Image (cartoon, rainbow over all chains, first blue to last red; front, side, top):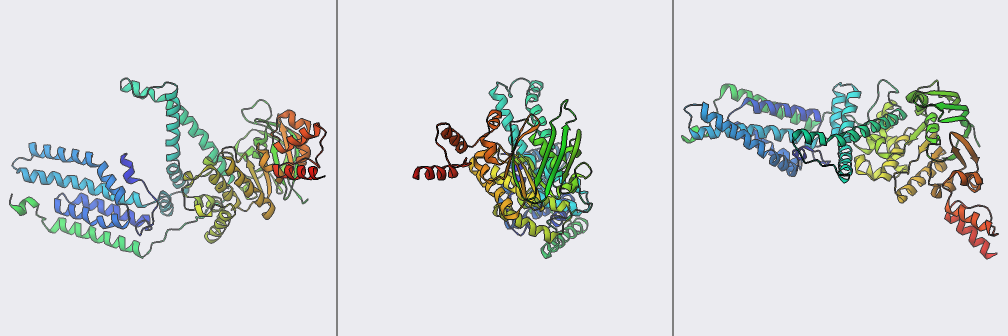
Length: 262
Length: 283
């Protein structure tokens, strides 16, 4: 299982999938900043939990769970680092409050991962490219982006074929020290790069044959339009932002430790 | 036959890296609505010749192109590729490297988007092209999820959507299984028969496709050796010596003829052979 599986887009029809990527991007930015504003566990937990309905609405709970599992190791690391540094440097804090503060940092990390994974799980790279295009980024760059995404699985497959072929000729990948191991990959990389160059020549030929660059203002099969539900998402994100900023300035959120007088 | 849609006079081309011409003194006239098969051993210059039909040679490859070539009334040397691409669609050998979008319909729309066609018109023509090539149901799939045959039909749809007068296909079935190849040939035939599109097909698998062709051109070592009716070309001694993949039905005809059994004209497919043999036996 790779950590990227929790971010890999899968085509699915859900209200979240059909939303405008730009609206979702605003949502991601706001959730990010809100998570950064707080270092208290209660608001961070709330940020984590209010995203759960979105996960279920988008029907990506399986992939979400995978991204959570994949980040478990890193989350543990963050918890341990915080705990150790607070224990040695925070002075007169109780063990409970150290635990709580470390947990808060871990949850902050999980909120970031969760937001990111919702965005990438529900936004097709095509839509992402389109959003880039409609935000005024030159078409060549957007095209390079979507084409790169398109060829990731193809190149991965090709790399596997080359690895198999070189192994069949007796190439050992997992032996020797770190320098040796890196050098082992040269016989894999060279054919892979040569093939990629050849492939790109063929692609260029095809693009030319389909009138690439014929007119200045090219049109697009799809158009992004902000719909009612996108506005709803943007407005609710903004409300979250306002509440977060207001709370962090005017309200002192108590920690669980304080509430329990531990 | 109609007007000449492609006309080449004394055409000679040398690649920038080549020391001798890839083809030499090619004279060729292709009429509107013809179905042409070009065949010949690997390296005989047939792919290079095809690249001249839409301007990839000389504009993309460079090199030295001598002689004259006009396609759909346009001088290939004078017009940029995107001008010629409106008239000539090109389908290449490897289906994987012809599709670069993340969904099938986006790929088919690519050419039209480049031409700045309005959105409603793109939608209409994309759906039309997908239906003709029989891949309409796959329109939301990612190209890399499809089989080779399906990918190649998407590639055909994507040039068809641009409404070309000529479609050039350079060994479109060499990466495809027999059933997929058969389906591709049927699509190609219907483009020619129903839509009147001029087809130029480079192909080795002559068993399945010869019966549809109006004319067959055999190239060898950069020259056109044979150019004529497929039945005459395939029964000729030169075709056998060059190593053209002569259909088995035609070989059977020749073998029977050598034994003194004469069928009524050379067949190009097993169906035709069956009819001729049945006819001969009932006499």
